[in-house]
Image 1 (tube, rainbow, N blue to C red):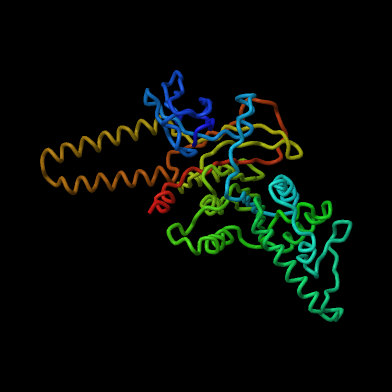
Image 2 (image 1 turned 90 degrees about the horizontal axis):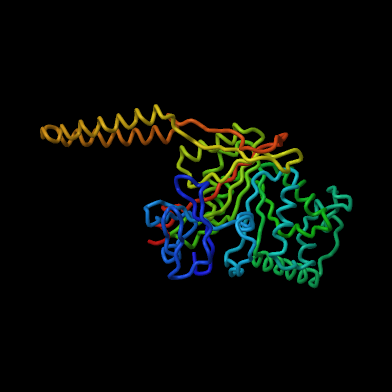
Length: 397
């Protein structure tokens, strides 16, 4: 966070309670009923960092989204400088290509116009799009035995070079991955068929298992960076495929801090499985919201989804820890087998942490938030990437 930024500070224990700061400035102070926070202590922090107030209340730092900013204040802020890294969005589960097309249109303004000749040459000769949007077979040049001239070769090489240079210079890219080649080819035809492929160059189509594709990208991108072998490269990601929970860990490792992960599932129980997975495996993701889509995949309502422990289990756990502490004190006082007792206590604590992480004793709180009744069209789980401390340590070494 730098001077001039506006932040949202949410209570760590109750994220529904929040503060919206004025533009950060050295010497200024955020005042609230939970205590004061100097702007000096906020400048230099990153999204998801924790800061304490004068009354020791802990707040998590957030960068406001457009929706949050418009809701919290009608004033405009000074635009910040464009981030140097490109915007890369992963869509896992290409399917028909409708979402791909919407994403390509959304990022279109970030890229310059591609070289037209290069795009025409880049189309595969076996499958080109007919005017009605369907894929039609065409005869390749080699089939017609047209002699290749030096001029044609030079034009092809220059066009390919121009396309490659433009692709490298793109400020926004949609990576769409599907495990079936037929789906990927059909979706590419759909995207290219809309307004003569005006948005097609913003999309890279891949046929692969999404987790394996991420591993391959790590190898390709970080080949010269041995200090951080798995450096994140994705700005945001969308999982819309069967078994999406199996890929969450891989996708999260490729997300930049504060990046958004959206998981679409037809049923709420599948979203709950994803929530449990994130907790059990310690994936650095924070659940932002769960939304039930309305008819036609529009509108909808938000659900309150969170984990909780019954009070009886919390009380029993507290009593167990107190008993362990008392036993350790007595053992040390008698000075008999103190070393073994301490090792046993540590082992028991490690086991209890493992059991807690595995979900034992945890229950899911799941209920719709107050609002209008809707007819569901599926559910979206929205997470944000938290800072991965292990990656921070590796990058600083």
